[in-house]
Image (spheres, rainbow, N blue to C red):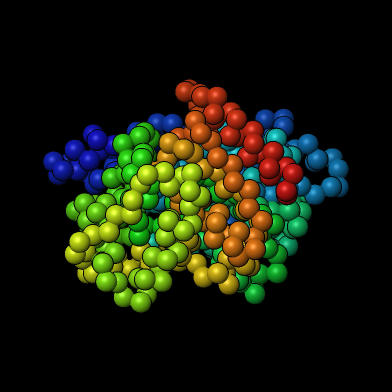
Amino acid sequence: MHVSFLAHNLGLSRPFDIAKYAASWDEIKGPQSSPKIRVTETTFGGVQAQVFESTAADQETRLKRGVVYFHGGGWTLGSGKMQTYYFQCWSMAEELDAVVISIEYRLAPEARFPDQYNEAVQASKHILTAKVLSRYSIDPKRVAVSGDSAGANLAAAVAQQMALDNSAPIKFRVQALLYPTLQALDFNTPSYQQNGHIPILHRPLMARFWLEYLNGDPRLVTSLLANNHTAPTPSQEIAVAKAKTNWTKLLPVAFQKNYKPVVPLHGDPMLLEKLPGLLDVRAAPLLAETKVLRSVPPAYIMTCEHDVLRDDGLMYATRLEEAGVDVTIDHYEDGFHGCLSFAFGPFRFSVGFRSFRNYTRWLKENL
């Protein structure tokens, strides 16, 4: 990341170009099937995807579980073809005897909000049709939406939209969100303050990802980190939104620790005019109205102690529970952002194996 930003500052490339190039080295070249898992590439509603199908029930008439998955990467990096995501979806299909559909939504800067969101909804609507589910022998009553990090942001937003969509008779049964990013109004929650310099997701980098997604000026990072976009005397709209990110009320006391809210002395109300997406529920699902949250499916939310996004997931869990939604919080004291991916690839950690095992167990028991 540092090299990528240095090259940009020298005028040699765009901010994330080198990081994207490095990530491409890790991609699987072409679908690779096995006797147990059939992998194909296709499109759903014009959106590219990889489909991982368990072949265990091919000779039977029973229907299988389905999981629509959105990979992470700050809406800017990553691909379902990267080894970690590829083998994660492969393993999910095998463990769950399921069909896992990994959505290959477009990335910034070629696509900006709401493009990624629109593609996620478009693909999901196309998948949640009797024709498509029948083609893959997926049980229409057992389809989940899931994702990690920015992909979990898309999964949460899609779960809200599909729950409200009266034109879609088939709904997601559950949602499973892995260390989701759900708001950009407060970059000084206790987890942001505690883990600001903890790998692999540093606090300034998360602000940079949000600006990339919302098509903002990268020079606004410092202002976002100071919470300057939330003025001391906010408008009614901002005040309502801030109440939905008020961690002093939404976070369990054990996670608040001794941290204090960061309120700017002056603030810059113009920031919200430059970045209207900060208040858009499609970008920030934590800001959804309670009546919307009441309609979403039961949720599994994974959080990690050493992760700037820990509190986003915990606050969303509280809001969902207050709305009457069944929520399972799976918190890892030794976890860090992206830890589940470390069950795959060349570098592996025990927390990666444990988190993947518990995640798939929950899906197996609830889907």
